[in-house]
Amino acid sequence: MKKLLSFAAVLFASVMLLTSCGSAIDGVKQVAELTNQMCPMDQGNGVVINSVVLNGDQLVYTCEADEDYIDLNSNAEAVRNEMVASLKSDADVVNMFKSAKVTIVYKFVGSQSGETVQFTITPDEL
Image (cartoon, rainbow, N blue to C red; front, side, top):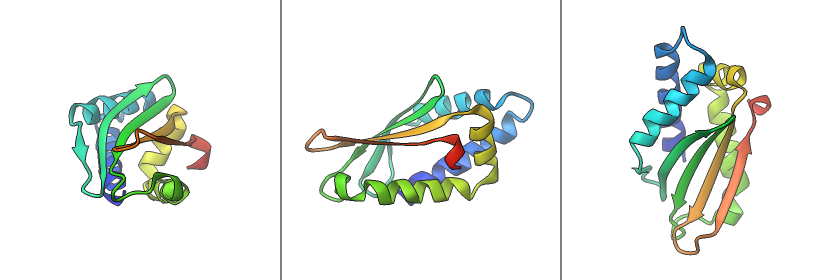
C-alpha cells in the first residue's frame, strides 16, 4: 500500500506543478488520465491498480487484491487509515483535492473470490 500511496503523491505533486495556472479539477483530471494510461500497475504488495478514472467528483481507483497476501475484510480500515495519513502528508495533494472537492474512492476486488471492498476519502477528511 505504501508504494501505491507514494506513487500517487508524486504524480499528484507533478501534475500540480504542470497545471498551476489551471483549475484544481483539471489537475485531478490529468492525474486520472496519466495514471490510467500506465495501468495495470503492479504495486508489488499483492495489489494491482487496474484503472483510475475521474467520475464526476470522485477519483476512483479500481485495484485487484491478491487474496493470498491480503485479507480484504480484516485489513480494510487499517489500509484506509494509512492512506488518509499518507495523503495528509502532502500539502499540495490536500489542497488540490479540497479545491477540486473530489472524493477519492478505492475499490479493491479479490483476485480469487471477486469480493469487493470499497472505501472513500472525502476532501473534508484530508
